[in-house]
Image (tube, rainbow, N blue to C red):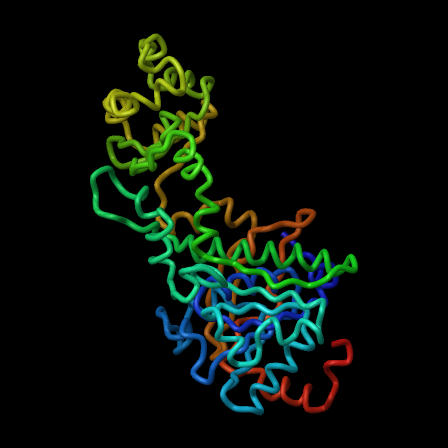
Length: 392
């Protein structure tokens, strides 16, 4: 598949300065850079801590590379007056600032939103933090694990009666990055229409509760906190992982028509007449018994057999893939999601590119991930020459 030409990227011409480390903020910045924004990543002299996370290829973190493509890097010591002045110049020349420090840190440096509001009224300033910019917990830090714990995710993850388990994907970090990018794009639309900029408060705690809409609404509806169900669903069945003769697979029969297809595939017509399984609600209430009956039949054949049978029947289904298998899926190749990437030392690797398409075209990787401070000389020269800031 071809990529969208760079001149058609929707955020072309938008300048972003990113004061972020690890995941939530850098992911937010990368989403904007994928859409064409020019992102300058400001790092401390020893770099974003993610640069130290393995696996390391020729000393360069593949984790860091996965969140920092299409960016420039400038390493600044913000305790040094000259570097602090350069950081301020970068912001005055920018359309967007993203920062994920604890509340108050940027203000103490003289780089907070309030110090730019008069000079740069159209500035979109996005602050990502654990609990938000105000309130009784605003001063607390947090990482994905602690936010998953605090926001209830670990209470519904894992098998019934089991120990607390976090989601294997750092969803608090990445959901917050998505919320941030969406809010920034929305604010930019307002600025482009002649409106004011904004200080956007992205609390990871709130974002993680926000994506738990089904769980919070369940609590609001019946007054009970949702419980762990393993791979099962509180309101649909059969809708979980099942064991076959040689492994596991998942099916999601989310309505009556699909349920009847499951009954046909497993050749157990009596299930369709069983009062315990008459409606979706009945099946959800009796899903433990239903699972036993279905797995007795699933044990008679392997995963390949059941995948083929449910595929033919039009019942949503899936193997339980590891990441090697998921990335090897023919759909991944068709969509051209895995792209080559060159690390600063010349090591060739791969990355998962933006999954989005605009009119059937993908989003290009315009820059490989940067070395720490790779663009210091060019950026310093640009601002020392007085070429920037004319539109500030």
